[in-house]
Length: 201
Image (cartoon, rainbow, N blue to C red; front, top):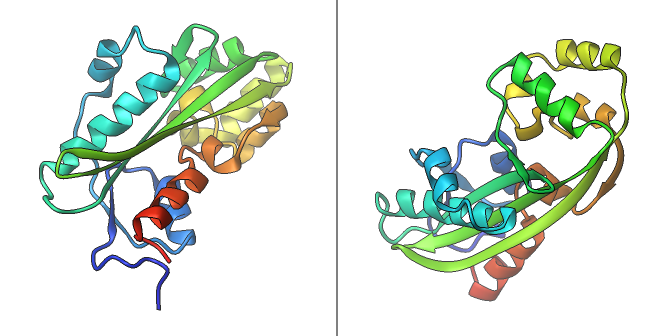
């Protein structure tokens, strides 16, 4: 018996291991089909939108790209944009870029704008945006180098150069917002929509 009531699994238009894990832990069967998009191009097209709106545009673009290949299926796209006031951050390309991002974020409060979009046959069924606010502590340069050593390749896997569910937690003084929003998937509003639609029990 399952809480998921549809005959086919939910299609996740993302290669994010943490999003898949969050959904599966909630009893949602997942089929992963990453969207093959140039996210920076889409971000450029949404440059005048707020960070939250841009995240939603990206989430919908990912879901729509996969929906074009999988007619009739329920597709979930998700995206997250880190914003420090007007500046937006992408995943750092390497250790030097991660160091630069963390130095900019050190001792300051930034926003994680997480969005999701549910699409079927190019129709947006529902979209949502949640924002979490995170304050980094004023860590020393010495600590930063030690953190970069310990975090290793994970620093390029997430925007901002940290994964809060791992050693990235050591960077922070204060966190305001839903845990799932921070992980990149606003799970509670997503599940509420699934219940309204009869997708889950």
